[in-house]
Length: 162
Figure (cartoon, rainbow, N blue to C red):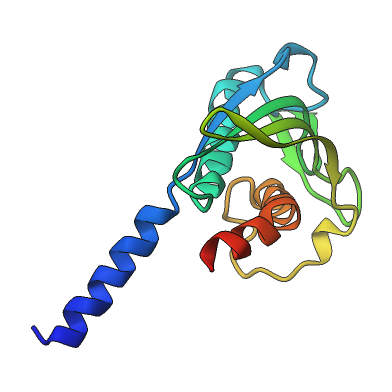
């Protein structure tokens, strides 16, 4: 292996080690959420999927940072309806967009860097082009969380990368 390849590999490893923030996600009173699942038995898996996505986003933060997120409400994209085979979720144009109510604190080594209380929604959610959106679970919700993270933490990520 050439020296330039070794140095390039070392740079990649160093940069990935610099960004390994974590997240602590809690769901506050999920029994009173607007719409956490189509069926009650899906709720634990849906909470896990949302928490996992937030944890994945937090990995972009510097390694000494922890993002604490309290999920206060969830309203999944679309709505459910009862059929002869049980409940199904339907997503129609502009009806019932995904929504989140989050409270968060970003800490670094015990020091609070920032806090916030945000209500997220994307009323234009069905007009975003994505080839696999129908087969990707929580596509609309994850996209909304991605937008929030980029908006609220993007400048900090760019500053940390310098």
